[in-house]
Image 1 (tube, rainbow, N blue to C red):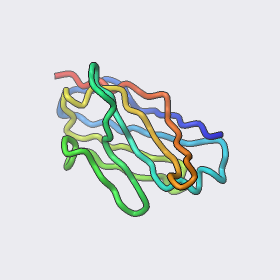
Image 2 (cartoon, one colour):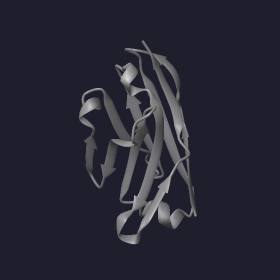
Image 3 (tube, one colour):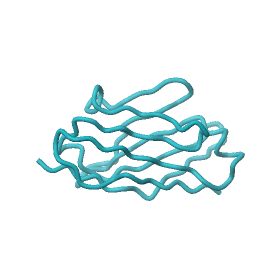
Image 4 (cartoon, rainbow, N blue to C red):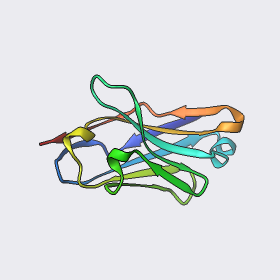
Length: 119
């Protein structure tokens, strides 16, 4: 089994920055073979949406965060980071870490961490 733990959330003023971290622990064999790592978020009253993803050597972002957020992977391949710059009140929500290996049907989620952007 694999557990994902997010950290770094909290309250930030609009225009500020925040860095989210997510670390996987547990089955090392599964972790090193993950082929996708991502951040999702769910705003109050809205559906969960993809914010940023790393798949292989490619990175993709939701249009709403392009140019403001960056995503990176830890050197040990068991961590993913989301650097959030120039945050806006619309970035408020619960952020979830997601990792897995598509071919194996493995898909893991963190429990989520709250980010609140004040105007």
